[in-house]
Length: 569
Image (tube, rainbow, N blue to C red):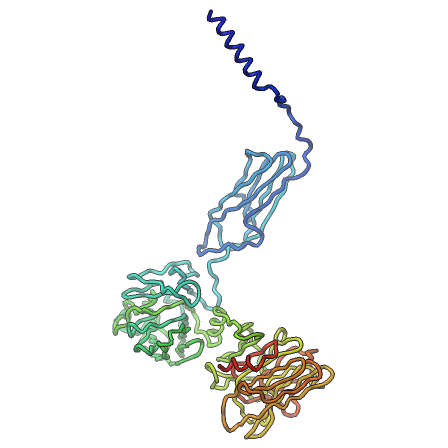
């Protein structure tokens, strides 16, 4: 009986299996055919030219890629800068492979990622991309040895080293640049290693928003101990609720040198760029790139025993006399192993805080505050002879003065419109010599049919500002207006040239309009001469100008009277 049951069960199972496959075609092997080509390799990340950033010297990176083949992938190799990182030989899907591979030790510099794939027929395809791991920070300026931007960390970016925190230093919750700034707060500050073998020249620079409470504090301190001030330096502030004076004390080994610096208006609530330089022969304190005081030490700074810098306080070597922690905001701290010049300090300010045009059509701005740099391009004009500075200014720390047989030249490419332009500046006329060029653009001295010539002529009591504009086939004259030399005043001069007319303004008031037969012709004109007639207009005695010029701006449009008056508000 058991045997019969067993047969019945087997028969039923066979019937069941047979019914499951009813209507389904049997599996048959398909010939994949001939290998039609090599694999396709696509590197998804990084792409060509990718720049990978980060504060760390070494960072991880994840490479993303895919490989396809019409028949079968046999192997895939990943190489970085020629070194094999990994090889793949097993694939779930032998025609399509999508993968991510993380490399943990990417160093700063240029790199080449290569991914190659081989199929079963022996066809190989290699794909490469060039990419870069940017260094955390590269020094922007000569002699730069320390940069701490305070953007949420106390990391010094050249060494990738964190400062030590004493107490509970804070972030200011505001910044001049970036996302934050540093505030030492009560009984707190930062310390950082300092190399006492660095030499006898030094510069410190930072943006500072002063808080007058407490009424005095240390700012930056390098010292050996609190028994004397004969080593290192102490930058600090003292004052009251309305004024704070930034001072510097420098140790020279057997003595000390004092620099009483300058005063910051507390009530203004403004960010001020503070810089100080130390050399064997002088110390200088600068506000916004302008020197506010110079002192002469008895010798070079002595770094003996100086092993750290205190940031935001007097610290253990200078906390006496109340020079404790500061509540002021500090941003963008840089230290240098050179004594920077004024032009280098101004360049640092311009590079890190570039000037943005204030007016429509503005193409050049030279404030002449101790340098002749155009703040839009950060380029300097060429000096012919020995042009100098006036020792006074309408705005800022100085103004330009050409001096005898001297002037500046600057390329005009991109400065003027095709058929219109404007020039504005502040001017304090000197009637000696009795005539001179002021701004000149020309092609040669044989005619005045190209460019323009802004100049003055007159006597010891009156000087007339005139312009001559070349129109290609001829010239147009505008006799402008007269300045009272005896008044000794700064006058704002504006020249506008449109396709149909030229205008001269004094202090926003139109002096004279002159019609033009056609627009200005720039043929053969390559440079502007500032402060003289130059080679194309030195005849008739229009040589160098001994007048003071400040805040020179050029425009590629013809300004309106309202736009000019807005500059004076």
